[in-house]
Image 1 (cartoon, rainbow, N blue to C red):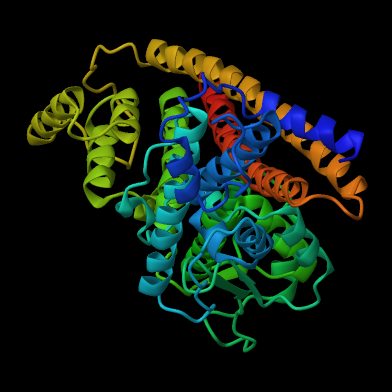
Image 2 (cartoon, one colour):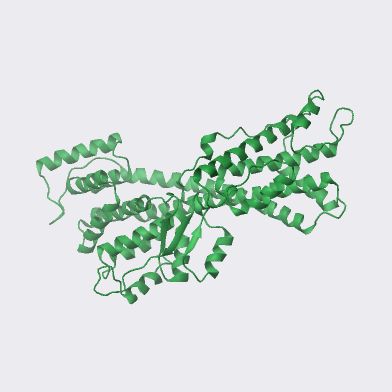
Length: 479
C-alpha cells in the first residue's frame, strides 16, 4: 500500500474511530470470524488476529457505524441515488444487501428495505464489535424507520449541488427529495392574466414585490400585507405560498427562486409531507401583533392601516388565542395582551389574565378600538424584565450554537481533506484483497461522514437564523 494511504488509514482510524478496548480472548474468535460477512478468511496465526487484520476490521467497523448513524438521521439519503455508490462498496465488502426498491415503489416497500438494511448493518457491526471488543450503536428501533412527514424545515434543505441546479435551470418546475418518501414538486405560482379577475395582479405591482424579496422574511411579509394595490385574497395567497416553500426549503430558497424565475415557488405535496404554512405564519402574526400592541402602548392609538394589519394577521392565530389577545388589548393593559400572545393559554398566569378580561368586559369599563384609549386595569406584572431575561438566555444559547457549528465545520474540513487525499492517491495495481477492502471501508466512512456532518451544519445554521431573527425583534421592542 502506498505511504499516503497508510497515513490516511491511520489518521481516520485514530482521529475518527478511536476507542478500541482490549482484545477478546482467542476462545470463540474463530467462530465470530466465520459468522462475519466482511472479516478476512485468512488462517489465524497463534489464535489471534494480526495487526493488519485488526486494522482492516476496525476500518470495516467504523464504516458500518457511520452508515448506521446516517440511516438513523437521514433515511432519505439511503433511499436516494446518492446512496448507490456506498451500497456498491458495501456489497464489495461481501455484505448481502437487500435489493433497493425502485423510485416508484410504495412507502411500505421502502420502509421494509430500510428495516432489512438496518438489521444487516447492525448484525455485522455487532459481530465485528465482539471481535474487536468495541461497542456498536444500539439497535435502531423499527419505529425510527417508519415514514413520517418532515416536521423540521431542515429535512429538505438544499445541497450545494441542488443550488447549482436551481441557478442554472431554465425550467421553474422542479422536484426535490426522495421519490415516494419525501419528494415534493415545485412550480411557479400563477395569477390570473385577466384584469377583471379578482386574482389578477398588475405586472408593475408584481415587479415591485419581486424587487423587495431581498428583505428578511417578516419584513417582506409586512410589505405584502401593507401593499395598497393587493386584495386580502391576493395577500393571503402570496403569504401562504411563500411560507410553505420557506418552511420546507428555507426562505433563502424562496429568495433565489423569485430572483431567478420572477415567480413565487408553489409547493405541490407529493408524499403527504408538506408542513402547513400556518405554523410559520402564526409566528409572523405574533410578530406583527406584538409590534402593533407595543405601539398602542406608547402612542395610545393605531391608524387605519395598522387596524387592518392587526385584523388580517389575526387569521393565522389559533382562534381562541386571537380572541383572548383581542379581549386583553381591549379591556386590559397592552402588556397583558402581549403575555397571552407569547404564552400558552393553559398557563396559570394566562388564565388569570383572561379572567380579568371577562370581569372588565362585564363591567363595560371600556369600549375599544374606537375613540381615545383610557387607562385600563393594570396587571402589575414586570413584562419588560421577563423579556430582557429571555434576550439574555437567547444570546447565551446563540453563542453555544455558534461554537457547536464551528466544531462541526472543523470536522467537515478534516473529512474533506481526507477525501481529497484518498481520491488523489489511488491504489496501485497489484494491491492485495485486504488493501482493497480497507480502501472501500474508508470510502464508505468518508461519504457517510460528509453527508451526516453537512446535515448537522444545515440544522444548526437554520436554528441560528431563527434565533437571530427573534433577537432582532426583541431588541427592537425592548431596547
